[in-house]
Image (cartoon, rainbow, N blue to C red; front, side):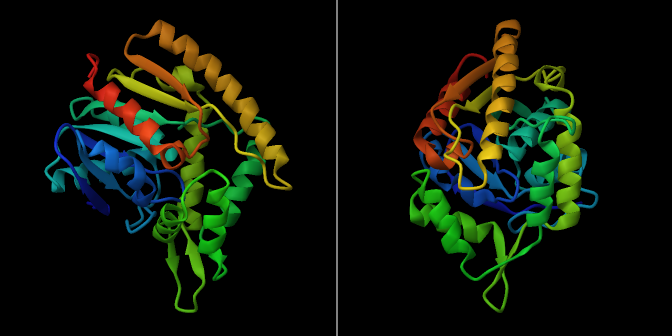
Length: 284
C-alpha cells in the first residue's frame, strides 16, 4: 500500500480532491482552493514521485489510481469529485473510469496529450526527461518566480509552488521532481493515452465530466517559438474533438477560458467558479 502526501485546505460541503500536473505539487492549488472552501471540503494530493509523496515503481496510471484510493480511504474519503490539472486531469478521469462508485464526477483542466507520432512530440519528451531529477542552481526558485510573473502569478504564490515542487539540497541547489525513472513511466502512459485521441480516450467514462481547455498560449520565451507552434496546433485538434463530444454526450461539459495552461494559478477565481457551478449543477 502506498499512501500519498495530502494537504487539507478545509471547508465544508461536497468533497473535492485536487490533483496537480507533471513536476508540480499540491501547492499549485492554493489560490484556487481558497474560494472553493466556501462551499466544498477540499483535499489536495501530491501524485507519486511529486512533492512529498513517495514514488511508485513502475509509474503507471493504474498504480497511481490505486495509491489515490488507498490514500483517500485512509483519510475517510469514500466519494468525491476529482479535479485535476494537466497530468492530474488525466489521472482524475482515469480514477473516475476505474471507480465510478467513488467519483461523483471529474474535472479535467487542460489535461490532454498527444501520441508519440504527433509532430514535435519527441522533442517535448526529450525536454521533459532532461529536466527530470536534474540539479538546478541555487537561483532556481527565483527564476521560477520570474517566469510566473509573465503570467500574472503573484510572487508569493509562485515561490511557494516552486519550493513545494522540488527538493532543496544541503548546498543550496535544488533537485527537480519527478526522478528520471518516474518521468519515463509518466511519458509512456501519457503517450499511450494520447495516441487514442480525446474522443476514444473518453469513451467508457460514464460519470459527468467537465473539460476545461486553455484559450491562450503564453508568449514564448526566446528559443521556444517552436513549442508555441506545437501547442497551438495540438490545441486546435483538441478543440474540434471536444466540440463534437459536447454535442454527442450530455454527460460531458466543455469550457474554454481566457487563460493559459496554468489556469488554476493564473485565474484561480474563474476556475473555482466553474468547478463550483459544475458541482452544484443537475448533472452532479
